[in-house]
Amino acid sequence: MKPQVRTRQVKIFKNGRNQAVRIPREFELPGEDAIMRKEGERLIIEPAPPPSLLALLQTLKPLKEDFPMITELGIDPVKL
Image 1 (cartoon, rainbow, N blue to C red):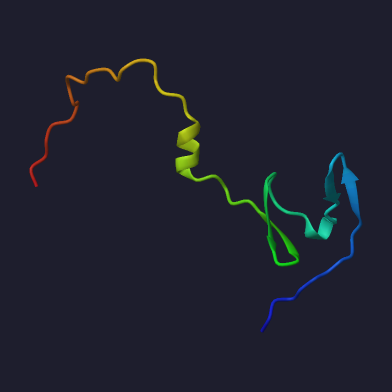
Image 2 (cartoon, one colour):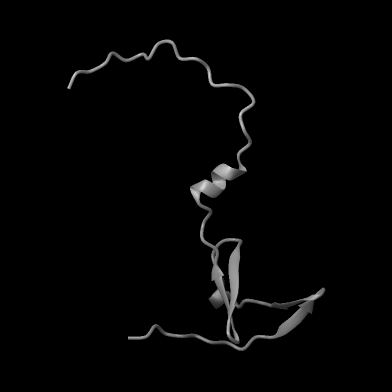
């Protein structure tokens, strides 16, 4: 069974040098970012995936100081 396809005709307008379209409420995307791609004559807009842990880690600045030396582990070793 094919998923239901909803369509709606919308107006294209100019926003500066760019073309723009208002997305009707029933087609509202979650979040603040989207991915846009063109397949043939189709323009496809999808919600952007959440950032990955790697992408988040790449935004962090390096630490300015070294990690402190740990002289005592605090736990006694356990024999298994």
